[in-house]
Image (cartoon, rainbow, N blue to C red):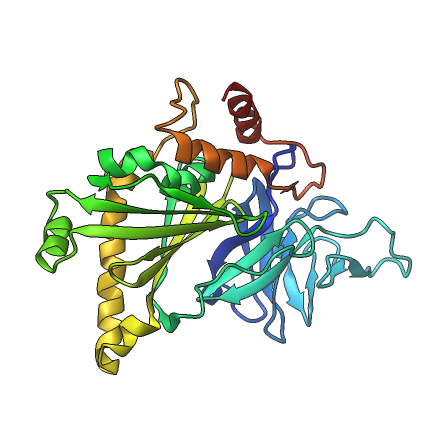
Length: 339
């Protein structure tokens, strides 16, 4: 979604680390194809506005925080939490159209999340209740590829064999708990010859059981049944063809209880490093990948096609509120008409 009409599913998206947004400060970031002004008010609340001022197009991220408002650097218009202008020095009459598109925000796991599409239609995705409260550090990576490539990767069954050397032992099971949710679970044999795979087999993990839950088309929370660990992959479309992904881990309460308290942070970091090592094979393949749908296989590509149908069914939103579909969405429409 850009000012030219791109749109993305209504969902919670990770924008940045909470530590990046200091009290009383503003930062600038491109997301959804448009510049955003992200700031923390004097009371400590994080707000997100479209950074292009509705008055004359000044960059609001160059403005300053005045109490709970963000002040434009050019004419000192002040915008409140809901994006509406609340003060104009040159006049006491504030035009009805004097408002900025704003995003609802929530902080969790050391990240700032924002909901694209007005009032949130579902809760912020989080680790389930049986996950231990402590999480790993967050690893952030950027790619010259649409965010759908990253989010759909967990549902491309073929690549688990070709890229990760995991032989599926059963047909993946798909389950849907809500309109914004798409889940899959499967078992696979660890056949790889990499250092990490050899370690897994040495400690007795010869098969893996994985459940992946996608929320809003961009956040995947996976659970490994053999290691009792959780992984979150939260993706952000910077533009229609560039994306950012945030990766973090959590242990289950059962796994944490079996470890001394002082050992838990170390084991969590080891788990995080193993997760990143597993992802490196994907990174090498998808780093510059752009979707080009050609010859698709109804059976072998069933998991991926199912995820694309799900993604394409999600309600869309845009910062410009024109609701136009992005090029990636249009290509998904074409794909669905051919299957």
